[in-house]
Every structure is written in structure tokens, then in C-alpha cells.
Amino acid sequence: MGGRTVSGVGGVVAAVDLGASSGRVMLGRVGANRLELHSVARFGNNPVRAVDGLHWNILELYRNALAGLQAAVREEPGLASVGIDSWAVDYALMRGNRMLGVPFHYRDGRTAAGVDATHTLVPPAELYRQNGLQVLPFNTLYQLAADRESGDLQVADRLLLIPDLLGFWLTGRQVAERSNASTTGLLQTTDGASAGWNDALIARLGLPRTLFPELVSAGETIGAVLPQVAAELGSDRLELVAVGSHDTASAVVAVPMLGDDCAYISSGTWSLVGVELPTPVLTEASRAANFTNEGGVDGRVRYLRNVMGLWLLSESIRGWERDGEHIELPTLLAEAAALPGPGLLFDVDDTRFLPPGDMPARIEAYFVERGLRPPRNRAELVRSIVESLAAAYARTLRTITALTGRTVATVHIVGGGSQNDLLCQLTADHTGLPVQAGPVEATAIGNVLVQARAQGFATGSLESLRDLVRQAYPPRSFRPAPSGPVGHDNISP
Image 1 (cartoon, one colour):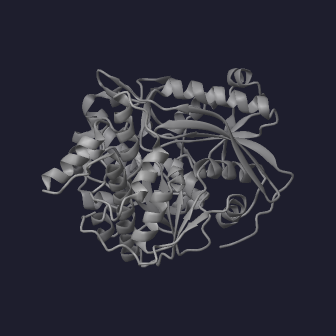
Image 2 (cartoon, rainbow, N blue to C red; image 1 turned 30 degrees about the vertical axis):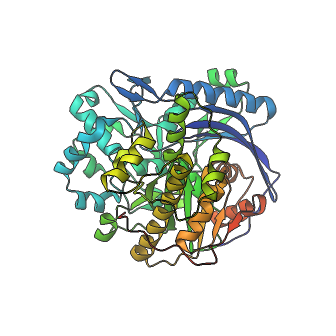
Image 3 (tube, rainbow, N blue to C red; image 1 turned 120 degrees about the vertical axis):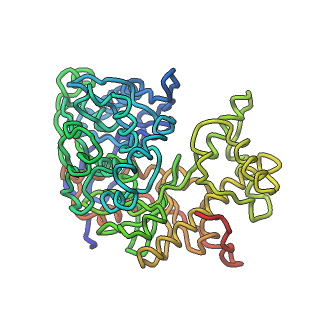
């Protein structure tokens, strides 16, 4: 599965990388043994609560993405292409070229009834055999069930996931990229790189087949930007290339794994803990453990579990800052690291932690309800959050080994969490495995590399591209504590 990365004259591409809390536009230069990225624009992603619920401020995101691409073209007039990735599951309903409403945020509570409505039509065990997805109340098919009950689907003729929506505004072409389409729960699980929509399941769920657009795979050219967009950007040659448009799919491309005995943790707002497999795992044991099979680049399967992520920490800080205080995260983390371990453990996946709100109060309530002492100050709370995340990672990796038979010898942490030394060290301690941390901008790097390969600036397998990542961004190493791995916690996954 190896292979050498062979590059031509090299070139420059742009990645639009939209996360659940922020977005960025990155320029990537790729050539012979060269991989360089730098940011040309960064902006917040702040949802808006309206009378009907919580929404993404999608027009503001698009405006900021365009401004970032303008800056990219000014810096690099010969920019070859752009790729877009974002979070999964959320979408806009369209009628012709018109967006019918502002996309809902996956943390909005409207989809709760959609889970039961869907499982009434297709029992959970059968649904898992059909789509292989972890049950999360905001999965696209549950959101669509809510839209079906509200009547919204009666006036829509297309569904566009978030990166596909922005891609449509750039090019005028309505498509769905497969890695993100796999998170809808409505894509076939058995055909890998050529998977199509699961027409039988779509019909059984009472969803209009016309909603689901043509599918494309990462690496395909979607099209040139529209003339009016080209004029705004200042480039008449820019084209849009499909990348792993689910941000985790792009991030996994950039995990510098050296073999099949590696696991990855894409650590950001969410923590995606998993391994890369050639085929899905659709067993009842896998369903019971709530693991998901999502599409990756080149037809790979991202076998993983969504674990609550640094959202717990960022939402706690947001609450403190709403009270008028300025919080220095590095200082808090240093104070948390200085505390004697282990920290107080709680189940990070308890559903009470999903919506926005007073996170410290919810964590305190979790402990009090169980007759346990809650964290007494902010340093203890931060230590509790970080250690509980590391413990959840360890539980998940042990379950992966049991479900797949695959031995994990090294854990790679990429994304924002790879900068958190306390999280990386505690993950090594709880798993008893060496941790390789970085790159931080894994999603943008994976986005850039898929474009570069499509443009001929790099060639080869994913393993070849990962070799280039390792050369350009050597990971930092964390070893388990000399005293041995931390004992297993007693929190059920």
C-alpha cells in the first residue's frame, strides 16, 4: 500500500475549511518534496438563534469565504483550484437555485422526534445494516424526518450539504461529494468509491428521491467558478475540485500513519476516534457499541465513534467570558496539569452536554446526581474535562480492537487538540500507547493534498501523501507515564 510521492512542477491551491466554531482559507503550495500551508483568512462561525430554532449564519460564512479567496488570489494570481470542506450532516433545502431557509444547526432540538419517526419505519438494527451509521440524534436522515413531518419537503426539490451549497454558489452545479453524503445515512455502504444513493431506503423513509443530487468523488473537478464569481475574486481560471468535503475525511488524509496498526483522533469541537478500513463493519456488536462507518477518500472506510470533544472546554470558557472575564486557556491548562492525578472522571457523551449553555453547571450536576464530589474550581474542572476525554478515547480504542481484531500500536492526534499537551499526555497514559501529535491543520492539509493530486502537483496513494505530511510536519511524541497506563475507569461508553 506504499508508494513514493512524485510531483511535477508544483502549484498552489486554496482550501476553504469550515469548522463548527471557526473557518479559514488556506493557501497550499505542493511540489517535489514540498508541502507548505499558510492562512490568508480566519473568521468566526457564530450560529444565530431565531424564533424557530438555532441556525448557521451561512451567508456570513460564504461572504467570509469569498473574502478569503479574494485574498488568496491577490497573493497567488496563478491559483489553480479551490476545495471546500465543512462539518457533516447539516444541509439547505433548495427549490431550483433558491435556498428555502437558513440551514438548521445540528445542536437544534427539532430533530428529537425524527429519531423515533425513522425507527418506526426502519428498526435500528436493520437501519444499521443498511447505512452503518452511529445513532446521533442530529444525523441527516433524522433531520429530514423532522422536515417531512413539518411539510418542508413538499416545496423542496433538492438537498445540499453545507460544502456542496457553497460549491453551488461558486459554480452553479448542484452535486454531493461522497464522503459527506455517507454521513446522511442514505448512501449505500457496499460500493466504496462508487457508492450511490440507497434508493430503496430513501423510498421506505418517505423521502422524495429528487432531493438527492448527483454524486461526485474526492478528486473530481466540479467546474469552473461562475463568471460573476470570477470577476469578484479577480481570477478567470479558478475551478472547484471535490475534496473529502466532510472535514474528518480530509483530516484523515493528512494523518501521518505509517501502517495499519495506527488509530487516529481528529480532535476539535468533536473528537472522531477511529481507524481506516477497506470495508465497513456492520455487525450487531458494532451497532450496539454505536460505531459508525463513513466514507473516506479513495473509497476507504473511516470506522470511528463520535466522542464529545473540546466543545466541553470551549463552551465552559464561553460561559465564563459571558460573565465579563477574560480567560487564558494556556494558563488554565497549566494549572490543570499541575494538579495531582487522576482527575475526576465523567461520561463526556452524556446527552446533557450536547446543547449550548452553562457547561460547568451541567458537569457539576452530573457529579452531584451520583453522590460524587464535583470539581471545586476552574483548574479542577478543566482537568476533569481533559482527563475524561482521554479516558473516553481509551475506551473507544479498546472497543475498536475488540470489534475489528485490529491491533493498535500508535495513536495519532490531529487537529486543534494536538496542541493540547495535557490532552496528548493523558491520552498516552490512559491508552498505554505512544501518541503522535500533529499536524494541527490536518483538515486543510488533506483538502490541499487531494486538490494537488487532481492537478498533477502530486501523485500516488494516500500512503504516499501521508509520507509528504510526515516530512513537512514531523509529529510530536508523547509516551505513556513510566508508572504504566492509567487503570480503566468505570464509566460506561
